[in-house]
Image (cartoon, rainbow, N blue to C red; front, side, top):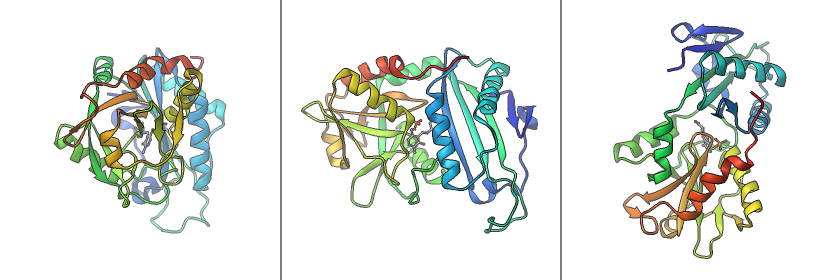
Length: 286
Ligand code: PDD
């Protein structure tokens, strides 16, 4: 449980960390967020996460409420006050609060800013190295999944459905039968020639920071990357399947619905990439 939360310039005890009832994030989902891994007390790939936050804000024309330096200070202060060594930092910026109105263009809005640091149960995180089951679900999200908005209800419902059958993640399937991504992760397969296949970054998926950093690692390892769409049937027949995100790093998928992947054990390549990931990721100064 996070004990101290940053809200609009104040470090508040968790129970007092409040946002206005007419915040547009609450009423319209008019807010963006980031989740950055904390490992050994350091932020992982902070620069790329902050670049993506700036892009999300820019796409929605929400004013960036803080300079890069101020963001860096707030994140470190929240990590420090909560004594987080291994976990994550969550940032959220909404357009702000005002009497409910679909239109916002004429309003002078002050963005609402929240920053939360959380511990991760390292044992539980490392258990996912043994592989997870995923459940396929129709992708019913909107047309701008490239923007990291808080409109996460379809993802939340999909994860609930997955959880109900003992799966840890939902695999989102578009109307043509292609995998878009996980509900909160990017999806990858490895074919019988050892090629790593992932959907090209477009409006259909979030361009994951873990995905981008993993591509750096693949180049270093001399592994072949193919950015193309793949179907659910292809994923079920793949040699390996894995997902990536700031919180799951590289996690092997051992079952999709009722189908075991390969021999049902975590893939060797995915496991190796998981081990090597932090050798290429940027480790920020504390
Ligand atoms: N989710 N795709 C979606 C839809 C996501 O929500 C996420 C991250 C990713 C992976 O992005 P990254 O590698 O930058 O974490 C892909 C975060 C972890 C979350 O919502 O908690």
